[in-house]
Length: 261
Image (tube, rainbow, N blue to C red; front, side, top):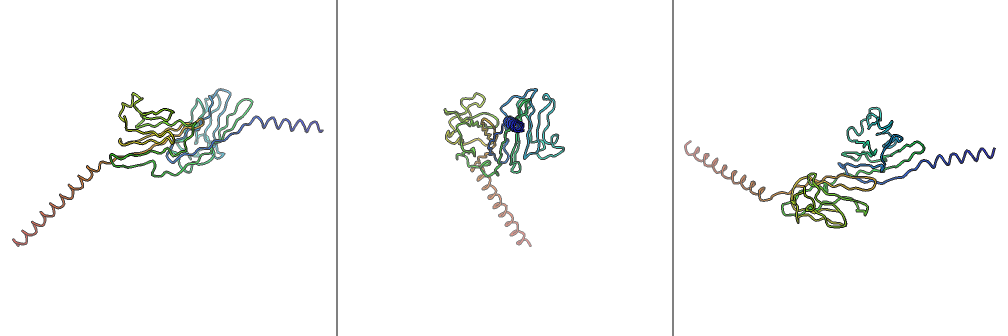
C-alpha cells in the first residue's frame, strides 16, 4: 500500500512539471496597438489558445486549418469585435485601438503532444492624456515622450507618416540615414538616447512610435500641429477692419436717412 501511494505522488509531480508558466507586465495607453508575442513558430503538432480573464478569445488548432478570434471562439461575444489580429505563423496576438476596459490578464497556452506551457501577459491600459496630441507655434520645439521608462532591451523607432525618421540605437540616428525620408528633417530632429524621446521643430502630421521588446510590440501615435501665428493674426485683423468699415457705412446711411426724412 505504501508503495502504491508513493507511485501516485510521483506521477502527479511529473505531470505538474510539464506545465511551465511565466508572466510579463505590459503597460500601454488608450488608442495603442499592442502585439503579444509567442516567440514560437506554429507547427502541426501544436495548439495555441489565448484567453482574456479566463475567457477564450483566440485559437489556432487542427493543422492550422482552424482559427478563431473573439466572436467565433466565444459563442458570439463581441467584446473585441474586429480589434483582434491572430498571426497564423507565430500565434502572436495583436489588440488594436486598445482601451481601459481591455486591462487584465491575457493567458497564452501552447499545447504540444507531450507538454503544455502557459504565459500570462498582465496588461494595464492607461487613460490618454494631452501627451499624444500637441499644438505649438511655428518655430517652437515639441518633445514627444515615449511614455515608458527606457530599458536597454527596448528598440524604439520613430515614423512620420509611415516613413522611418529615427531609431534609438547606440549611435545618433536621424532620417538622413534613410533614402526614403528624403532628408526633409535634416538637422531638425533630436533624439534623446537616455529616454527615447524625440524633439521636432516643424512638420505637422502623425508621428508613430514603435516600441519593440522580446515579448511585445507597442504602436503609439502622436498628432502634432504647428500653427502660423501671422496668418491667424492677419485674418483676424482683416475681419476687424471689415466690421469697422461696415459700421461706418451703416452709420452714414442712417444719418442720410435722418436728413432726408
